[in-house]
Amino acid sequence: MSTTELVNSANIVEERGERNTRRAFLAAAGAAGLCYTAALAYPIYRYLASPEEMALSATAVTEVTLKDAQKLPAGSVLMYKFGTRPAMLIHHADGRWISMTAVCTHLGCTVQYEPQADRVHCACHGGVYNAYTGANVSGPPPKPLTIYKVAVGDADVTVSRA
Ligand code: FES
Image 1 (cartoon, rainbow, N blue to C red):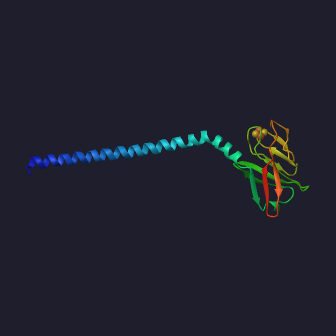
Image 2 (image 1 turned 90 degrees about the vertical axis):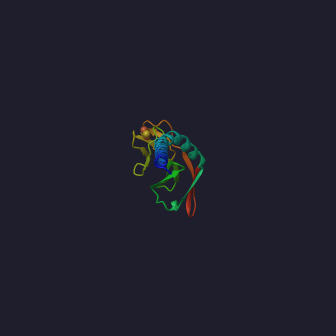
């Protein structure tokens, strides 16, 4: 092989090396771009899709079993999730068991049972609900809280859609 041929073949190898390096760089840049796009798109997808998903999963669940909830002392409350939404199981001082959603019908804050006042209160804007019926009593809430059926067993409490 002559010197010229050797130089030419070295140039070809060098060009191929550059092409490979360029290709590798473009592939890495493309992969990074995809990752970046996915990182940006996923939160947007979750934001847009979550109300629909939440509604679907909220309606899909019809019954929740709360293990050992029958031990809940009278005059106290157990917060739990009915599907994806917060809910309350209230064991009233008079022995009645009441369960209702814990999502305020005004703007969706989580409400709380106040045993000393025997009422359900929303701290966001002062909404008050009846702790037995879920009826909106005062403040801005436009609708009552949804009541669930309660079945107290020996080892658990089952709550289901009324
Ligand atoms: S969100 Fe409950 S009173 Fe406004």
